[in-house]
Amino acid sequence: MTETVPVLIIGAGPTGLTMALELSRHDVDFRIIDKKPERTKTSNALGIHPRTLEMLDDMGVIDHFLKLGHRIDAFSIKEGEKNLAYLSTNQIESYYNFILSLPQNHTEDILDKRLNTLGHRIERPKELIELKQENELISATISDPEGNTEIIQCRWLIACDGGHSKVRELTQTPFLGSDIKQAFIVADVRADYRYPDNQITAFFDSDGPFAIFPIRSGAFRIVANLANTNRDPNQPVSQLEVQQIAEKRSCGEITVKDLIWVSPFWIHSKMVSQMCEKNIFFVGDAAHIHSPVGAQGMNTGMQDAYNLAWKLALVIKGESNDALLNSYHQERYPITKNIVDETKKFTKLILIKSPIIRFLRKLFLKTALKFDIVQHNFVMMLSQLLIAYKDSDAIDYQHQVNKHALKAGQHATDVWYVDTEGNEKHLTDIIRGTTHSLLLLTGENPSDEAIEKIKEVAEWANNYNGKLNTKIITHPNVADRFSEHNERDTNANLHKKYKITQPCFYLIRPDKYIGCCSKDIDKTIIKKYLKNIFK
Image (cartoon, rainbow, N blue to C red; front, side, top):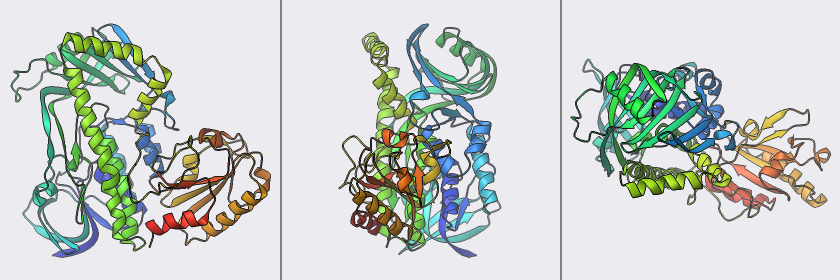
């Protein structure tokens, strides 16, 4: 039996589910298969960063995550009993200015149930066993445990099948990089903990790093390297061993009472050289794996899918040319390569036992992280909100608003403001959805000519084939001169945060990145960008 479908997704972890949900939101048909008979049962990936929380908001599932998740508001770094640094997440520039701790099995459950409500189901257990690409059509041979096979023909195949990707194997796609030979353990425990359960604590001692991540009240994830480098990799890790590691490395700050789950692991730093091979896309761990430092793995994979889905949807619906898909590799490859490289360097640094290096590391943490700007940049980096696309065919870099304002290729920072009725609103409230958003900002004191230009462009944009969500953002000085399509920035907070004094526009893509912006309210600039995206 052979069936033809536009998209076949291989792998139904968080990345594959994100891809499926996004395609569903964009009204694109697909099938999604997974070789496992049931979803993940263990906690695995735990931390959900602010950038991913904003995505989940846009996808309409954020309330389920917030209901089940555990909020993390701070990071503490210690050496033995000495405090080296304390960082609060309230500096993060997002409505979701915290890390959400939620076991991966719950993440998959939420996304899976949402997918079901949209009329799609994961097909499991089904395994990819053969692939053929002929011209623009892919033939995937799928097998089930009874040995039954079927051929699924698709135009596009999305590999979300993890670090041991079958798609990579069948396409003979190199997975380049190296390993860190040091063994680690990850364990979920019930424990008594001396610190607030809304903070992550990292300890450094002569044996190496030890970190505690709250899962929920009374339950914690601990991660540590194994000091015994000669240990048999097949030797199971006992509860007693976990208890001893935790007590020694934390200087008695945590007492393990019960072991829920434990697993040894080794760090691999590898990635593909091309995230797209003809009509096959590599997404998430199928494209890149790296050290868990910073807990960026699952988040990065879900963001890969979020970046790709809207572009693929436009191409499938015939609204964009295939060339738009080139921007997936252009944008995501430099980001993922940087994560792979930097997490590897940082992991090696924290494993170094040299007294001199340890002293310098301690000195840096104690001094540099005292400065507000360093703290701010550090937590913003962890939030993944600073990720920017610097060389993409899907972004117009030729114009800017001013040298201080956000630029094309950057993430559209969430900002709260007060509307006419005195209600607090967020920028995410008005750019939510699957279309491009055109924001026309008036500035503080626009001329009569500028006001008429803003109204003219808004009227034109609202008739642009339904492809633009258009809003005029009015400064309180001129709010009464606008009526239609008006979002009143009553306290001028949005203008202040975006550092805008003069009229300008921001064209924000469906993935909430700035595709184009300019201090000139000029239809020609907007048309040029849109012509590059749409047919």
